[in-house]
Each structure stands twice: as C-alpha cells, then as structure tokens.
Amino acid sequence: MKNVFVRDIRQGDKVSDVFLVAEKNMAFSQKGAPYLSLKLKDRTGEVDGKVWDHAPEWDQAFKKGDFVQINARAVSYRDAVQLNVLGLRKLDESEVDPMDFLPASTGDPEEMFAELMGFVDRIATPHLKALLKAFFRDEALVGRFKRAPAAKSFHHSTIGGLLEHTLSVTRLLERAADHYPGADRDLLITGGILHDIGKVHEFSYDRMVEYTDAGRLVGHIVMGVEMLDARLAELPDFPEQAAMALRHLILSHHGVLEFGSPKRPKTLEALIVHHMDDLDAKVNALQTFIESSPEEDSGWTPYHRLLERYIYKG
Image (cartoon, rainbow, N blue to C red; front, side, top):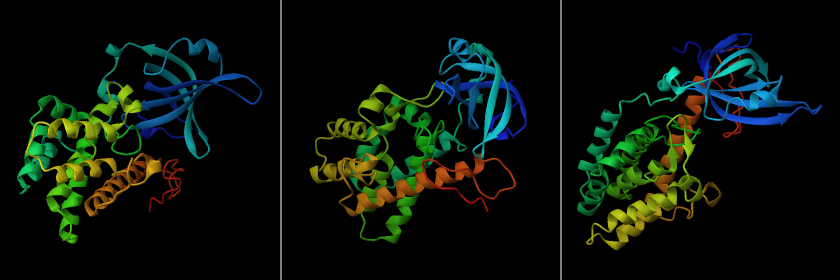
C-alpha cells in the first residue's frame, strides 16, 4: 500500500515508496558524467528524480511506464523538490494499486453525465437535440467519454476530466447565453458539449495519460469534425447551415492558429465557445497548480512553465 505521495514530499525527507516512471532520459553533467533524469508520478502529481551513480546500469533495469520502488532523498533545486534516487527496484503491476497512480475527477461521473444530459433534454431546436441524442446513445462512446482526460497535463488531466471540463464549459455557456441575448443558446450548448468530443480518441490512459497515435497525427479537433460528420450522415434532414456552424465551432475553439485551431472564431457562438473553453481550462490549471504546490513559507507557487508566471497563493 502506498504511503508517500508526491504532494506530501518536502525538502529533506527520506522517501521510500512506489512511483510510476512518467519520463526517463539519459543525460550528461557538465563534466560529461552520465545520469538518469526521471519524472516520477502518482495520482497527486509528478516530481523530478535524478539517478547520479551507475546511471547506464540502472537505465537497463526499467523503462518509461514501469512501476518502481525507490529509495531517495528529497532536495531543493530551483525552488522545487527533486528526488536524488539512491536505489530502486522495478515492480510487477500486480504489486501495486493502479488507483494510486491515476488521478480521478472529484465529481461523480454518473451525476455529471446526468446533468449534461439534462442540458441536452432542454434543447428546443429539434435537429440539434437529435444530433446530440445520436452521439450519446452510443454506449461505447459514452463509456470513453466518462473516463477520458481533457488533456495530458495542463488542465483536467484526470480520469473523468473530459466530462468534468465539458460540463463546466456547458454551464458557463448557459450563463453566457443569458448575458448575450443575440447568441443562439441551443447552438452554444451543442457546441459546448461537442467541442472536445474528439478527445475520447486522442488519449490513452491505462497507467498514465498519453497521446494515441491518432492523437498525435490527427488531433482531437479534426477527429471531432470527423465524428460530427459521421453522426450527421445518420440525420439526412439536418440543415446544412447548422452543420457548417457546428463544424466551425469545433475547428475554431482553440481560438488562434498557433494553438492548433485550423480556423479562428468567425461567428458569435464560436467566439463565446472559445473563450469559455479557454477560461475553464486556465482556471482549472491555475487552481490545480496552487493545490499541488508545496505549503512553504512563501505565498507564491513555483514557476508555471505553461502559464509562464509565478502564481500568488494568497
């Protein structure tokens, strides 16, 4: 049974416990000595690890994705905790509890999905409701949708994270529809529910969140449009203008070309979906980073590489 979790490790601690090897690379010091650079993971976060002695021999003993029992000393490096690994042993999967290594959404998946289907039931536009019903009567899709993460690491990177994020964005869009009466409420809700649907195929998440081959080569935006077109083919009377509007919502929801959007938002609904999606992702990323930061004397977190800033904890 795992006792020491990443979020609880402090400088000076002796650490003897099981971790998942999320990354493993051979590197060389300024003097040319080889060492292993690791990212060690459990359900509470990741911590950098270094194997300084006999690195080439240890490199043959385990690989990325393995579970390892480590003995280490926690030190401080560049304002973050790092583990100097003194010894380790590869474990068989039967020796660990997988739930110690896969973080899960705090929300109940059945309750979140039921609430999301409540939004579907309240859609008044018949062809949009029929489209969503066509998606979610697919039991295999629903099963993946309830478990998939929303990202590899930046936001909602948990089992059930995609459902949690989708529901949160949809709630925000309902409020935006009240605030901006010129926006098409049913189109906003439909776009919010479907904007990330391709992520059910973008990630694998058996031991840790990783991109699938299709996720790297095609990506969730294009896969989402492909999934949309497959469902539209089942609805021959679906209005082409509405179909085009939904394709645009999915294609443009990352907002700018450099963030992977094939198109920038060019309709009111696409603009609103983009900003609600971006807001929810960044708020979750910021809150998660604050919660996972060491509770030290400083009121600031370590530097967040993706947000490119320190964050005040208050």
